[in-house]
Length: 116
Image 1 (cartoon, helix red, strand yellow):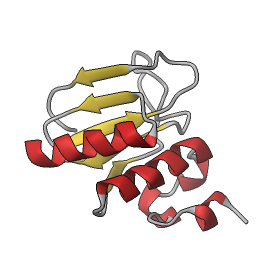
Image 2 (cartoon, helix red, strand yellow; image 1 turned 120 degrees about the vertical axis):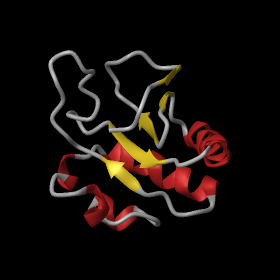
Image 3 (cartoon, one colour; image 1 turned 135 degrees about the horizontal axis):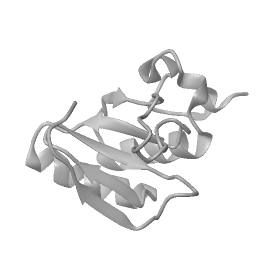
């Protein structure tokens, strides 16, 4: 049995060609977040190479971004992310970042600019 068999709401294909680089801890929390949110969550970015000045959370498989098109959606997604145990959350104009890196500071919420 793999992590993909455990998940109720997400399939491997939703995380792109590098899906197997995603950390099980992140995937389990994201699955819980989806349960609390009660609606589908569209992953817009999962594992990816990051620049030398960016935190390595995506590159280590401990983060993903999800579509978050408006302030009402954002509020409910943040509530669900917190209930699911995420403690690294970034808010942008069209998406939100959720992460659970064991090496980066926890208990952080930041505001970003425009979505990529």
